[in-house]
Image 1 (spheres, rainbow, N blue to C red):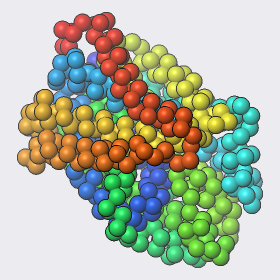
Image 2: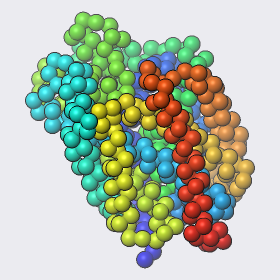
Image 3: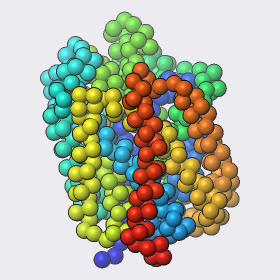
Image 4: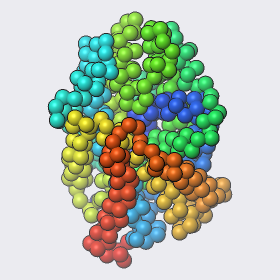
Length: 481
């Protein structure tokens, strides 16, 4: 049976946008922007988008489209089997992220049900951390939600592109509608302007901090799904005669615009919460997961009408935002595995979903929230940026950017970006951030939890190389097509 293809360029663009736009656009970008210089953060964010995001998106699309393979086989075909570990590194990193991503989807699904009667009451923080997360050694409510999330992912990928295409029209378009609904609703609330001011007021001194630049590059990689193996796999399924450059610009622009607009939905509502509480906005802002599951429920409870409806819609939005990224990541892993070991797609997809669910049980334990926070920090910043650096070096210095550029049809500037700008910028932010971070633990977590985080950063590359060696022993280095 021949390799599957997207039915049209439009479905590919929608699928790639769905993979890029996820929960991180809503609960990650606005707070990162706020804590890293406000409006000034848009400068490193834009620089990261132009110097790394778009060039690497073009690289991954070109890599998949040219080789008609997932990331491991793609690097193998261009550079030889010994370099397939770069592809495995991206796929394993993405899969590691999706193991906790589906747990966040489970939280959102549970909270959609809680919204029916606003179960968090007048103490959303106490409800989330005490009543919801800590339900014994293993949280069966979260396990149930995760099981449903993984079942949805399996149904979306079990037949490959055929089943993915049926999902994207709902899971991509519905979140946009809901985001705009929350922007409109938030901007009409009293105190909204104060929240927006906190969101965008620039602090240019933040631009001198290496961590701000790493946050910008990490956010670009996270929300564009770069370094996950996803975009390589999706591009490998493209029909003929597709304009990769135009589609890349559309996808990158849609992702950045969604992140920026989501900030208005979030911070206008936070401004309203501060207004109702009679306190400064800075006292009610919570970052990351707490923004979605503590701050926003508190604001929803204060809405003058139909808070239950808005609660259900908000958490439904988080679920639909997350599922596209989740099934795209599993699809990338399934494509990569079947490239090397032809097997029934339903079987490979099923085994991957079962494995992801099993690993995700760690994040459904009593300490699951803390493990999730640690994993998210180290994977979404250091690991994704590292993968991007390896990809740029491999194409820029081993394969030759001009060879892939001619295939993609992009201008000469791309050669300069891939060979010089991308490696230099990524290496700079990694080096300075590592120097800054090594002497300090992340957050207030115990040393051993941070050690696990660094173990993830070191262990995934080692595991990727070991997997590559095992594959080579099985297949033989000369069987690269």
